[in-house]
Length: 79
Image 1 (cartoon, rainbow, N blue to C red):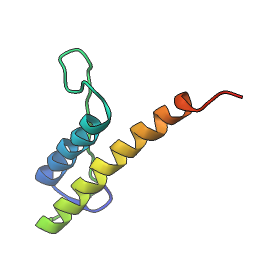
Image 2: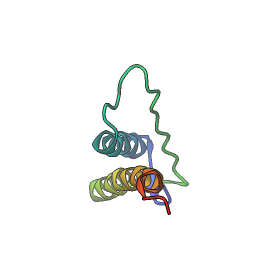
Image 3: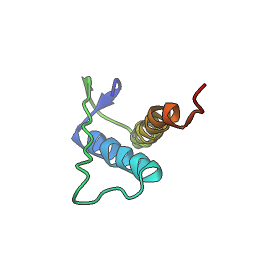
Image 4: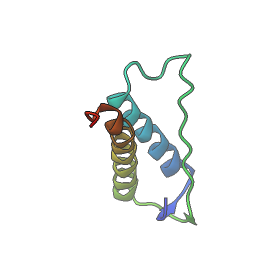
């Protein structure tokens, strides 16, 4: 995350990223799949609640989109 962040905001972003996984991977969060997300902050600082929400939402949507983009080529008709 390239915004001021602290442990609380990074944890929230990682949790939100898992929500993005759960919307696209079924089943998700089982004891067998090994899903994991790491959140790293590039700047330390005070974080406003609105920024925690915005960063979390961005993480959630980015992970969801990455999963869609990763599987899309497998579902295209071959020529």
